[in-house]
Image 1 (tube, rainbow, N blue to C red):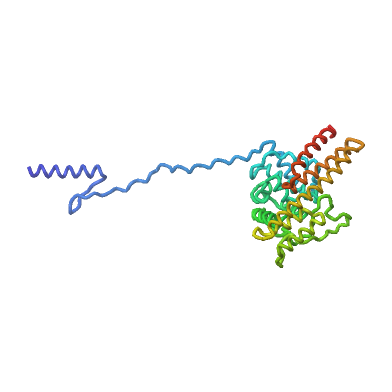
Image 2 (cartoon, rainbow, N blue to C red):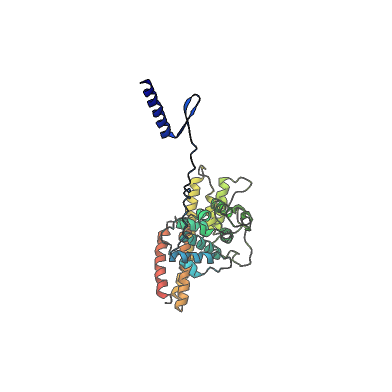
Length: 346
């Protein structure tokens, strides 16, 4: 009986060892010896291959925008009246980073450089609500040394506020960090701030002065200087500019009065006054061109006078959008555009 029970115990241990692996005997009894596990010979699954990135497909309209952007980015390109006309039908505000955004920014840049008696880049940005600084920093279609040089040229042709100047140059610095090797340092093309520039702006007056002698009259600094300037002095300088017919510069100067200044209310009144005077000045010039169109001997001359009147009224809207007469100017523009379509050669 005892022997039979012992055999059952040995058999159970053997079966247990066999199920778990191999078994053997030692001096102290039955022990389990694990057999090395054979390596898995199944080939490892290769990592998934990255899908090829599809090239960006532009629509026909985007391709057309891109062609113009490349043309306008060439310094030797001559910006024409036809180019300027193409900017009039802006449509909705373009999406950030789009070809349309780049098209408008470069168009405004070239328009300023080609016509230094017109609105500044800052005025275009405000009127058409295009974030020019953001576009220059982030839009891939505006990247490059040549576009940056043209932007700087436009800033030098028509004065902008120091805040706008700083935002644009900061955007160019950000963009310059991604330029190709061999490109000049971005700092080499950035000019001094507006306070050190002496380039005036006056609608209808050539940049080199009425006499065309090539000399640039010096105007009071529009930027900060080493010596602090009181708010009263700022207002005085603004009035000096307005007395010379430089209403845009006068507005930029008076805007430097601090928000907490006791003269801030007077500064706001002066801005309204200069805006009203500026828009009236441009309307007078537009009226003269319109009257010349009415007595022109042929349709071609009539259209040219009408286009001059239209440009002056468009400048008025861009430069002085808050002036009380802005609505009337827009109505005048509609009438002039109808006449241009009527007399323009078909």
